[in-house]
Length: 144
Image 1 (cartoon, rainbow, N blue to C red):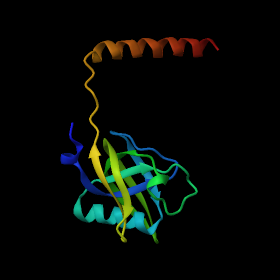
Image 2 (cartoon, one colour):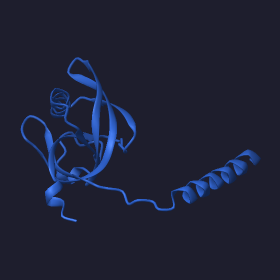
Image 3 (cartoon, rainbow, N blue to C red):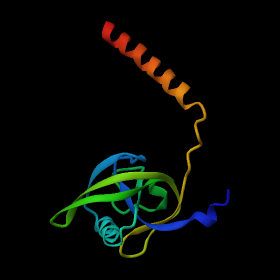
Image 4 (tube, helix red, strand yellow):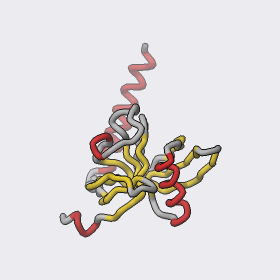
């Protein structure tokens, strides 16, 4: 698969201590100026935002080495602005991997390509197996 054809540049939101997954609704407090600018840009242009987790929550100005290489493309659902900060609701769309992570001066941005999950050919069997395992664990828990 040639990833060069599928690479797009997205505004990026580095998260501290949180991870976004596809299909997940996530509410985050955004306080960094570059992050608030990225969210504002996504609202104005209706562009997805690339959300990636920082390796250390103590880093205020993350660089490429401070974030993990795989994140999630998210849709900005709602924004509540409180002073210079914002409370943002995101909906995870798809897993993604970035090739670059940098600041364009206004906000963080990344060259990103989507990661497709392999199809699960035995989905009904997998679900049945999972239900049985959960049931067994619940019975074990109930005995305690």
